[in-house]
Length: 208
Length: 207
Image 1 (cartoon, rainbow over the protein chains, first blue to last red):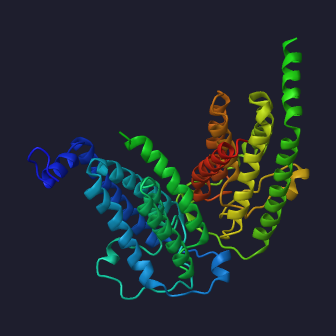
Image 2 (image 1 turned 30 degrees about the vertical axis):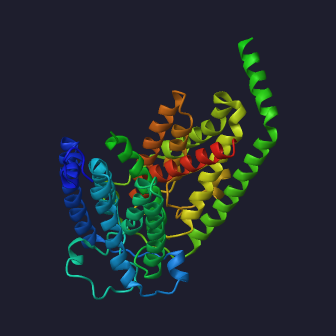
Image 3 (image 1 turned 30 degrees about the horizontal axis):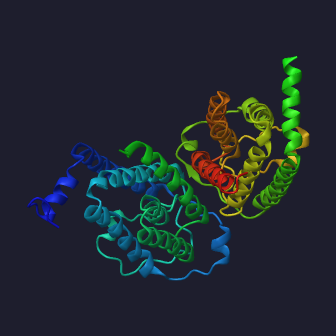
């Protein structure tokens, strides 16, 4: 792993800092996006009061799949950020930038129309202590748990293993949120369309 | 003389693709029937209103002329313009409209929100009354149809008219409290997705 006497870490650092300015900008952007998402989700949590009937929720029994619901997104997040950090450090700013835009779009939608968690949603038990910090039950439209892995599928399209894992996770989480009655069907289905639009926009903005 | 030549050019292109156009019309008919069935279903099943940050902060205002008549004008233009833009591809543009209609019907079927508080009933001409469904909300057809025109007619300046129409019509639905804001904003994203699906299918099968 050495080139002209440089260690792997030195080479990695060079690559990571290659787009230093863009990296700093993307990190600022992600912090703003996280804060925005927190504010909009907190707002939705307070004002939501309507749980309309839903075709799939009416016909599907509520099933407790809490383990997948809580832990699979963590695995997805880890892959999403650790893979480029290790393998594609020059691209890290691009990935963080697109993720930030996805979060901003999500925050925008969450504040618009106020839907409440479906009435017979399965309650979450044994969640890790940090879960409450970023999880808001009324932050429904659109389903971030579905959109986020799908974003991974789009970003890592050229890597077959990660692409398949991300798409598979997205489908599994779609089924999980519906079976747990923790999202309406429009939240889930529209997540694919909105994520695709956010990805194309992000690709246009952040591409080198 | 020019008009006569133009007319013959359009007519020849249409004649060459007549079976594809017939198929596209068939798709539109099927999607419209599907849309009507789902629209009726959405109006007759239990539903619930929701609060909305935009609707709760703007008064209901009647924009009938825009919502009804401007919409009908845009709708007619969307179906007629392909004859002048690319007459040999009329079937392609019409098929895209049928996909949009079908996807919209699919969404309407899912989650049943009731038309927002304070909504003003649009006064469509009598012959169109049977095609208006107040609870067919997600996503907004008034926004998505012209936006699809903007995406499809990319080599023509008319696309900017369709983009402006999409924004004006989306805004009019909010002013009249006939759609929730997610219906309007999500329409842009969903329409873009539909456009890409149609474009990829067209490239793949050389349509």
